Length: 251
Ligand SMILES: Nc1ncnc2c1ncn2[C@@H]1O[C@H](COP(=O)(O)OP(=O)(O)OP(=O)(O)O)[C@@H](O)[C@H]1O
Ligand SMILES: [Mg+2]
Image (cartoon, rainbow, N blue to C red; front, top):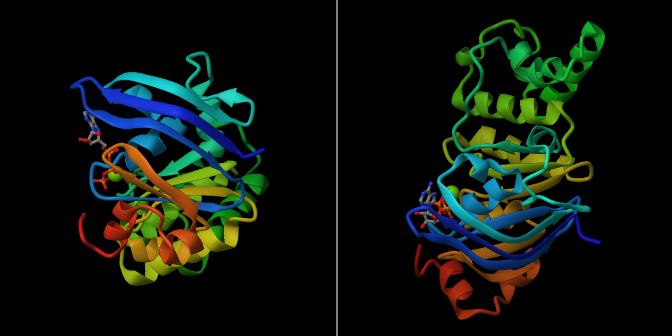
């Protein structure tokens, strides 16, 4: 069984835009799945559905089925707070809380009721190591997060998500605003951590998908045009539109 089994997912915004049309795909555990395609293709909309952030957007209608294990994520009765602990998300622009580095990473665990200083210390260190930030910040954990560079802030946001040990991490163009060193660190932490987590990423470029993806889904104007193992789609795309996109003919 796949971790996600998605059938005929259709999302329509209240202005009538159909941003996803009948998307059917399975997503495997412990892999990196990349969503690629030109602007407006539906990548962010798709990611938002997976942790029910679409609840907050201007969505008129969502139909189909999004099975995560035995749970249909479109079921209105789902506990979204619990869901967002199990499926975390990192956005394009780092948005640390106006707190210290330590408190940013400890925040989720504290909110969940963890009081043990020793456990929090351990979890904070582990998450910062996993996000490849520890070596740069271990001696100033009490400094405000706002003092970090953009790339460090984004790794802090990744650490914050990882501290809750989610099952799935969604990343929407996580490195689009970052320097090359932070970008490389985020890519390498994704690759190192995929044995423990499942990553679904809208990468900031096709090249990035090439470096990290196991599977690639190509979205064009709300349609899932092609979905293949990365090695297949990059060498032998089946659809002419995928080939054109990969060769830089549009988008
Ligand atoms: N809140 C919204 N209200 C109305 N339409 C929206 C909203 N958000 C997205 N859309 C529309 O849905 C479609 C898909 O947008 P989405 O942001 O999912 O694409 P994307 O593939 O993430 O694009 P990008 O590469 O630019 O990030 C677009 O036509 C977009 O205009
Ligand atoms: Mg987007």
